[in-house]
Length: 228
Length: 180
Image (cartoon, rainbow over all chains, first blue to last red; front, side):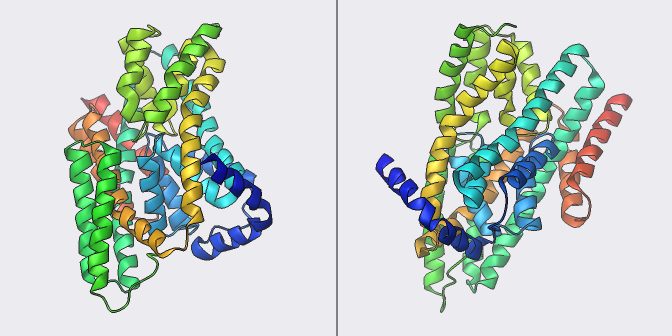
């Protein structure tokens, strides 16, 4: 493990440009994005996301507005972020930052996401102590949190639509879409309703999802090589 | 609120292991955090913990900001920094390693297959996360109505900025409280 990473670190500088060109070709992360820009972007995302739902903001920013990631790439990164230990959105920031600028990119993205909001949350705690029992503040925060859940619901619908549309455009047969829909619903039932442990459940579902996609793909004349 | 070394060490001793087992994020280890902070270390009362949790959930930013908030509560700014590093760094190193491997194989046929397989799972997980938050919110029907109203607005009225929708939710709840 350490060996592999060391070896790769040693290889990094001469291949840096090639790697970022490959990334650009596949996903559209601009090569020129600066660390400051990444930091400010993630700060803005962190500070805008009242009441949670940060991943909905990240998706809006990087998939809808900037097109750095396709819907499928983003969803896969999100799944990876959720099955690894650590806060989901922090993991997502690491995945995006790493993709954009390697180690400094990952560090800067996480700092952006955490530093501003940490100051905010502590300021709020100070306010809360000073005006203990300020019901109006409490109601406002609860309301914003409920809205944030609404943003997550909308994100679910948007992502589902976009993923199925991408499947259609890449020439997958309709059975692939039905399988994907089934997997999405099964995930919701297993984790949301039955409360099965996330990581093993997701890994099993991923195996099933790949199997279904393979079966559906085997029957199609031409197989799309990339979901996006 | 003097930052004393023992308290800082305790923060590290508690949050580093939690970081490594927090699959599914902060909520997965919330119960253990509460047990440690309230029962084992006696840093705060149950009520104080609930307040900190409410603040971390309502403030902008990742929900995991409960961790720096606990650090701040017990040891001021230094506590916030130490708790954050203890909780965020270990899991981040693991994720960075995973991201590195993941991107190295980008372009392979099976990489695309895995990506496509994970995409619908993420959709299901986000929906499950939304459900979990709605179930834990104590506002009941109003929270559900607000959430689905906001979702509908977001889907059919794209021009509307998400911040406006958050403001709308805050206004609805404030109004409901003023009336009820």
